[in-house]
View 1 (cartoon, rainbow, N blue to C red):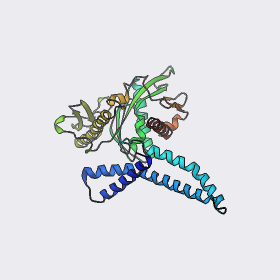
View 2 (cartoon, one colour):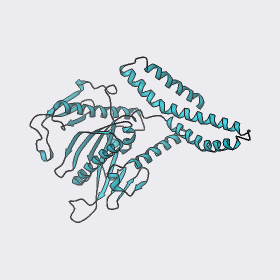
View 3 (tube, one colour):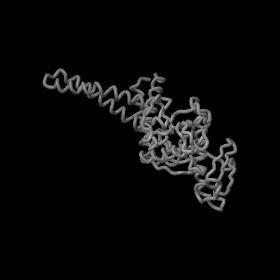
View 4 (cartoon, helix red, strand yellow):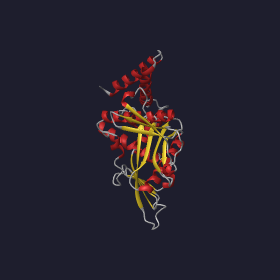
Length: 351
């Protein structure tokens, strides 16, 4: 199929979906049609821009024969000579196969790995970094579960980040993050290396994942805080075990058992949805454990070196000497570079 015909079919499909959505679709059919149209509309917009530029080029070339308009036509052609290749490249990127989860909200999970108390302290700082990034992007950041240590570190932090294209921006954050610094508890001034695992999962809706109540074991227990102190004396904490997969989710952030259960189900659906996506895409990890690794110091995607004030992303060999600003949530420079590299790799594979 020629590229022109392919573009015509995309534009026609978008028009068909617009007409279908005005006919009163509901439920799952409406959701799926809306998602497909939302995915096609940016492509259709770029098709329109490119074709308009190509028509303008043809018209300008025709004006070159008119002495009175030749200078104006040459200026227009000079402008279009730079614009058309840019529009064509943007269209090629837009035509790349989409990760259907990109526009979704996300579930963020942060846990200390190697390094004891220092890893837990840095896990708390990373969790706060993502909260600040969400604020800068105008996203909603809701803590689903937060278990801290006596020193103020983080045992486990889970949050729901709601907004447009959250997963598309944050999916590159999944993996092992390494910190190098002198811990506050270190009397000899020696630099320690610790690691924290981060997992970013696309948020799943009920239409994405069917969970059979018969496949769940639900336990309730008393919530406890740092050092085992009881937060309350009622059995409000909830632990849900999905028996077919062995996935376990525990929530104790809320005082209400009902709210903790709802949050646990949200995280469970996200983990099950990611398992389904992993199975469907051979290039992705076979399960969530591959996404975050074992937490060993040698497995890392990014290093935060506090003595040198630098942050290095090892996947794209990008180092920024502004660790304070990165920890304040300024992550876009890394994320933009990772997105560009991913697009370039997929374009190269498609040619």
